[in-house]
Length: 226
Image (cartoon, rainbow, N blue to C red; front, side, top):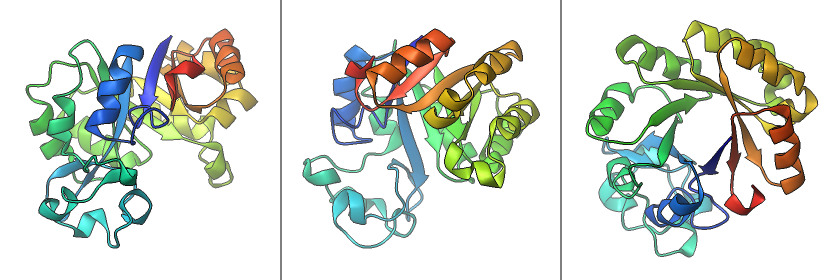
């Protein structure tokens, strides 16, 4: 079972920063980071489009040039919002990377960034359009994210399996609520050839329960949970 550091293990370092992945790397099998395009076109590692929560600044990542972003600091840590290429350079070769794309329209630039990256890379997204773009132009392994808060809109296991089949995904990433409510679905997905990585696991008791259910990976904010 893999341990995957969510946003670079956000409880152990400022989320989605180079410092976070450096701290997490000795303790995890993979790091997960969120990627967006900023206002000047570069791919940057940041979860929210709005800057307020992370930096205290107004505005949106999608409207802000990188020369401005790099002067901001994430959660008062002294760490800037990093370029994806710079952050990947800090990940040891034997630690895998889960790149979560937050929106469509980045496939070509992502492939260019990853061209010389030695790490194993998995690309995940909540957006089927993101998976479609990559499926059409690359053979990168893909993963579909879905969760219980959108179950009322059909984002359930059945939907996740259908998207996974459509884009030949290597993995499914259900939320912890879906995985613990319907643990039998984990084996169903694995029998269809999908790895199952569950997010975001915050308690050791939940981690043990999911391990017993046979999950392939746990996505965590703190490696000590596992």
